[in-house]
Amino acid sequence: MIVAVPDSQPRLPLRPELAGLEPYGAPQLDVPVRLNVNENPYPPSASVVADIASAVEAAAHGLNRYPDRDFAELRADLADYLHRESAVRLDPAQLWAANGSNEVMLHLLQAFGGPGRTALSFAPTYSMYPEYARDTSTEWVTGRRETDFSLDVDHATAMIAQVRPSVVLLASPNNPTGTALPLEVVTGVLAAAAQVPGGCVVVVDEAYAEFRRVGTPSALTLLADHPHLAVSRTMSKAFGMAGARLGYLAAGTPLVDALRVVRLPYHLSAVTQAVARAALGHATELMAQVEGLRRERDALVTWLQGRGLQVADSDANFVLFGVFDDRHSIWQGLLDRGVLIRETGPHGWLRVSVGTPEETAAFKAALVEVAGL
Image (tube, rainbow, N blue to C red; front, side, top):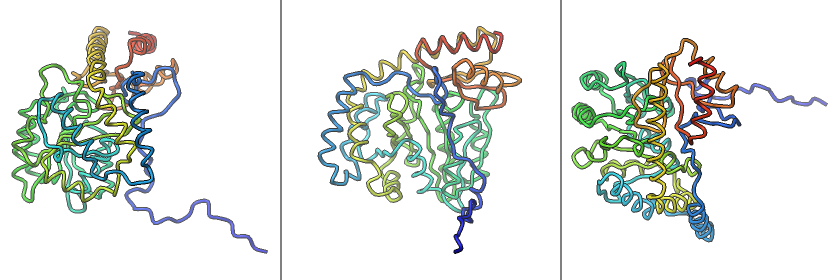
């Protein structure tokens, strides 16, 4: 009898542009101090956990039914939160949410990108942006940031006129640099995008907005006058809800309605909606943690600078620092001492998330030992 042996490397009709690629992801290692993915280091309090558990229990009684596919109550709660946080009153119809801001961004590229269209950003910036473009068959083009990681509005305007993108992605605060964009830069980009034939959506990614320094405004304040603007946020960082996977976006109603066309049916589970609404009910408590993390960040910047290192201005919950001739050896040396940070950004730079005081102390001690500071 002849037995067919399965081919260990079957021929699959993989898209050519995906051949040989590795999936995105920072290292997930079990070490004592994990400061590599910009998580909030503080777990939810007992009161937050209790309210989440109660909300999930209530939702569980109806899990035989599909959830509200347009999550009207969650959108209303998000609108209320943004009013308190940024003093901008939005109609719930102007809010959109998905499984993390990653899915929000994918919805944007599905709706406004695609074959024959271009997405533009300015490097260095978030490393997932080109993957959203790739996955939607959108051409990806990058301009440059300045040596201090700011964005020159004249350069941005020239790139928009040259490339004629359908989507411009601006992270503010920027990842991995932590740099926030002044509103005059954003309005300059919006003005240039308004001249693109066929239209251009400008997305300001404010995943770390709650950590911005006092006096740094949100692009939410520009929404009323710019229907081609979208501002994305997340509950992963400031709210300490990375495991809940809830990202959201604010924009004009026509832009939001376009995202409703491309989303999968019932893409936000009843459990996700319940968890997010319960956490939003504790926004005041959770934002008090944010203030402490801001202080830790600023103290860490001062400490790194005092050791003779270059440090990028940060309005986020992480710090980009360098410059090292062999950054990988520094990264590995820290890891060998139980401290995991991120090897990312421009050549020679490293990024460390702001942790608890104890985690920051462990990072400092390890860095002094490894780098000889």
